Each structure stands twice: as C-alpha cells, then as structure tokens.
Amino acid sequence: MKKNAIKIAMYLNYFVFAILLNSVGIVILKSQTNYGVDELQASVLEAFKDLPIAIVSFLIASFLPRIGYKRAMLIGLALVSVACVNMYFGNSFDTAKILFATVGVSFALIKVSVYSLIGTVTENQQEHNSLMSSIEGVFMIGIALAYFLFPAFNSETNPDSWLNVYWLLAGISVVSFGFLFFTKFENQTEIPGVDLADDFKQMFKLFAQLLTIVFVISAFLFVMIEQGIMSWLPTFNSKVLHLPENISIMMASILAITLAVGRLLAGVITKKINWIWVLSFCIVMAMLIVVFLLPKTVGLEVKEINSLSDIPLIGFAFPLVGLFIAPIYPLLNSVVLSALPKKMHSSMTGLIVVFSALGGTIGSRIIGYLFKNEGPENAFFYTLIPMSLLLVSFFILKKLTSKI
Image (cartoon, rainbow, N blue to C red):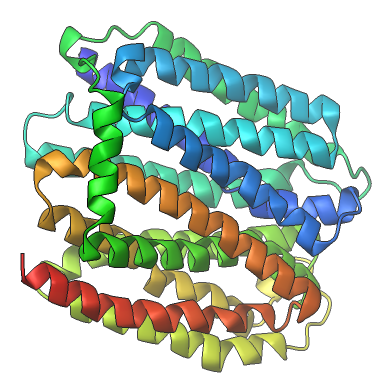
C-alpha cells in the first residue's frame, strides 16, 4: 500500500511538471503578444527553464539521498506553487523568467528523486520498466493537455485571462504536496548519499571515453531539435499559418501526441529490429518531412479559421515529425546505459540531464534567432543540419558499442 501511494505521488508530480515545463512555447507566444518582446528576447525563457535543471541536477544528484527524496519533492512542489501564484499577480516577462527558473530548479529535485525512487518501489526489471514507461506516459499526457488547458483560459476580449490557469496549476501542486506529505516512506526508500567529490570524479572519468563524448553530442543535438520545434510551433502556427492564437496552441498538441505514439511504437518495434535501423529510418523520415511537407505547409493559403476542423489536412502534416523523432532520445539512452557498467549509470544519468537541458536551451535560442532574422517560414528548415549530424552519430555509436 505504501509503495502504491508513493507511485501515485510520483505520477501527480510528473503530471503537473509536464504541463509547466512544456508551456514554455505557449508563454513565448503570449510574451510576444502581451509583453511586447521580440522572438529572440522571448527565446530566453527556454534558458531560464533548462539551465537551472542542468545546474541543479549536476550539483544535487549525489547528495540528494541525504536530504531525502520525499523532502526534496516537497520543496519542489512548494516552490512551484508559489511561483504560479506569483505569475498571476506579476503578469510580466520578468515574472515569466522567474516562473521558469523556479520550475527548472523544482523539476531537477523532482526528476532525480523520482528516477531514484523507481528502483526502491519495484521488485524486478519488468516492474521497473513498466513504472518508468507509465511515468513517462503520464508526462506526455501532461504535455498534450497543456496545449488545451491554456487556450481554455484564454480570451480575445481579456488579454490577461490566460493567467487564471496558474491558479489551477498552483492548486494541483498543492494537492500533490498534501498527498505526498501524508505518504509514509519506508526506510529503504531513503538511502544514504554517496560522496560528492567521488561522484564528480566518476562524471569526469566518463568524459574521457569516446563513447560518452559521441553520446552527449547526440543527446544534445536531439533535444536541440525537439525543444526547438516544440517551443516554437505555436508561434509558427500563428505567424506562418495565420491561425487564431488558441488554435495555434492547440495545434501544437499534435506534436506532443505524435511524440507519445512514436515512443510507444518504438518500444514494440525494437524487440524485432536492431535499434540502428529504427533510428536511421526515423531520422531520414523526419528529414523528408522537413524537405517535402514543410514547404507545402508554409505555402498554405489559409482562409477563415474558427476551429481545428477548418484547417486543411496539409496544415497537420509538419507536427507528424514528432512520430519519427520520438524514438531517438529513449533509444540512445538505452543503448549507452546498457553498454556501461551499472555503477556508472548514475554519473551518466547526470550527464544526460545536463546536456539535454543545454540542448533545449540552445535549440530554442537558435530557432528564436532564425525566426527573427530568417523569417518564421524558414526557421525550421535549419533543423536539417542537426538531423544530418545525428544520422552520422548513430553509426559511430553502433561501432563503439559493438566493441564493448
């Protein structure tokens, strides 16, 4: 019963943070329309979200068990509850920066705690895989819901009405805090922390391996692509397709849904087909979508749009790229972690979080720069560069892991 309560607490935590983390694209769009900032200025919100995740994850991963996973998650939920209320009353671009910085710090506490707790509340590898998949599934549901939740509070007559969503998010955080607070953790779920200096040494030792270098570059490139597209798709829908703001945001949910479907399908397919061919096929298909479907989307003549049903089918085409980029990240993680001794998994996980956060920040910043200087109709074409580099990295990783 205690373990089930802990699992529910983890689901609740991941759900609210999925909404908050992936609302950055929506807030980027609102910042341009409500706060008068340009695309490049708005793109800094991604950095305020991702850099705290990278820094805090790197610093606290080793000694968080000494603080206690439950206490760490409670701190994260308390911080984000206050930040949501502050966003409502602050109603400014600076307040949005504070919100995402707080969300980043809090999510670092939540993610490290949740990933560490999974092993303590499962009995075997199958249970571990199942719980991990379920938690990531809930995360994807939260991502998709964000694109419908924010428009539900939006109003064309009141530009500040969208801020009411933060009362709901603060409320969900408080509920999650209360549930977690009254959940009893067994002693074995709060394990002693390792030595901080030794943990850093392990990370630096990993850096000396070619496998690690190629992998972190690959992870960096992937997240640059994914977050760059996800964060700027609402703006693309608004400025290129000329869709109403609410519909622009809801359309972006298609990307989240295709990401979820792509990861589920990959889990089945990779049981029968080698990962290198799955990833190669996926990245080539993603590149073909950018080359052939994106231009048709850009050239789309959009008439009056009042609902999703009014959008021509080709308007839904580009978000399908999520179906093919989705399997890349989890499969890369699995390939590299499987090639390393288990004692190195913690250090590698720290590197994964750090470089994923950096990739998200830089990816959004680059796309923001391209939106401003090359035009929103051309920005996404530049994703072909990191996609091409990723394709090369797959075969290098295949060669390196085959030797281990």
